[in-house]
Image (cartoon, rainbow over all chains, first blue to last red; front, side, top):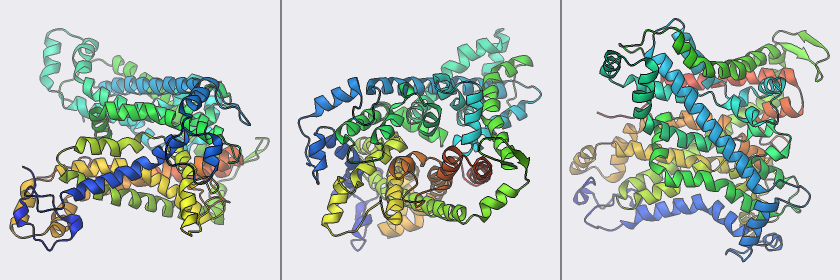
Length: 302
Length: 294
């Protein structure tokens, strides 16, 4: 047992920090209580959104809105998914926004992984002039997040005629210093004997890359992919700038457009249904791939 | 950082690096350089007249009362978000560390907000605190609390702080829990046998051993609050009422994209770059990249 021997815990200690000893001296329930409280606070906004998504706009408008789900769930989700928002702001159907988000997230994930695996392989397994320059150029991109160079980046993309295209939405985001650093670190740990053996067997660098390095990197790639998918799906500022044509709206951008300015005319049940649909894919990724997600977060530390 | 055994090719590594370097040059260095160049120019919104003006844009920005206010506001916002996201996370992690069974369930449930996009988190909190229909707004009114984020700047700032902290607790929780689990239990048992109570054990053993994690999360939290909260602010307040929730990043966006004040926006971009360089330096120079003991 990894727990502290409870017999040694003096009874005078404050209740909030008493260890849950194995002897059952009481307060075993405290950690559970605190954790449930934490989960309640965590889940509350999502619960409210869920309840609202099952009501009519009139139900939501009467303050306070009902605390339990209503009977309009299917019709709200169906309407928003198939027709989109109708009223003062006409949105594309939400399934289309979800498709855009999915495409963007997958392209960013695949792009970042391919680019960073290749770059890391180049700087770790080869000796050539300019190696450090290349490495530092990639490292420096950490210091240039899109938030600090909004206007000039927009201009570059607009000069390249990439506004309102999926390429413009994804290409500027697929450089990855974090990914390159991560794979560099991993490649450094591979034993030299592997390379020597490959060279003795006459395998060239590309063969070695394909048959040895890539299979060994599978877990790292999976872990990073989970983080990058969430990163890609949740993009906001860049798609907001890049797309004036709302057929290319991602679901995250689409929601903020649906709210508009006034709150009286907003169809809150439909907005909340869309919100939950926007949360669902990344949340499922976290739940179903928890191990890889945690590994990815800890590895990339960013 | 070089391996002992390497391949002798000279052209192949450049070929492998080419895509990443191309994207980096076109979408990072070119616009970054452009921002620096534009920050040194005086230009009207239509680009009709351009003249070199040295550091005038910087002087204007740094002499602007509004910018300095935004700077202090951003600092207040970032520190509040970071602390508010760290203290509950540490407490929850200490509790989760004690629960042997079902901790997978707790961890997973706690991690969900990390998956929620900042802009979407903003929408969720906006809905709860909407003065006319929000559930929490209604309860606060019923309890006699005067809280209106659409009219009162301080209320609005606290709303974006709460929403931002809510999203970041998950990340801190995960790292604190990992840190706690790597503390040798024998150390705590020895202290317990010597008669140190739980509070004393926490402050004299656990907390000091967690300090690399704490410092790491402090830097990551500040970076998050500075740069990743744009979506939250944009969805909840659009920087308002007036400029009450405008952070530096939001201001660059507003001045550059909406007000088309390109010189000022570029100067602000350059100032932000300096801040990022500082934070990145902190992260790599002083933060132990991995938490390890013994």
